[in-house]
Length: 227
Image (cartoon, rainbow, N blue to C red; front, side, top):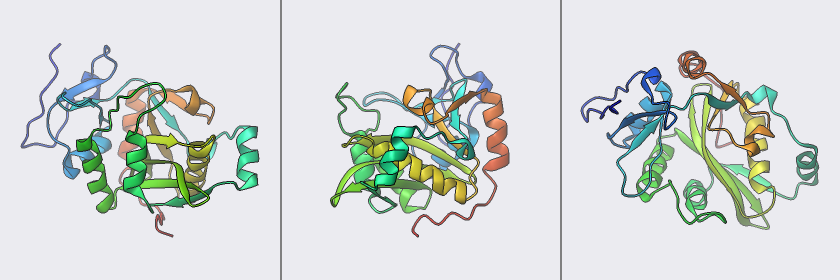
């Protein structure tokens, strides 16, 4: 099956059900990373994921891994860390530093899908008020964090990093608590990981995910990221 190339003059994407089964979720190729196209992609239910030297690849895996904020599960060990207050958590105070941290080398690979082009695109979305960061600090140093997009009552998680044990977990748990207060109903985690499963992440059918987006993306929240 041929993968559709996106029309540079149109922001439309193929129906999600046209995505490949192998590799799981590959939906389209090409286009750009303009704010308008990225927002259209997330509302549609797909996201970009590619490496340096590749064309832009757009994905809509099936099933889709999500967290329902009101159903977050906190492991006992993490509850103890939160009670001790060893970290300070802020929002939207160091977006560029967070995405650089997420793009940095990991202990299992030197490669990253968060290319310079991707960083520039999401920093632009942050300036426009769509992308947000969670910063985790210890002794005045940035030791972890995560970033993603907020559209309506959906938060689309993109990536996280940690330079201290439990730092990114504390950031995620704090974010979910805030999202619950603000009336968010869905966190998109894209793909399954054991890390997310420990927080109560579940897999839902792609069609179910798309239906939820249609209902939740136009909805309003009382989010105050700069508070």
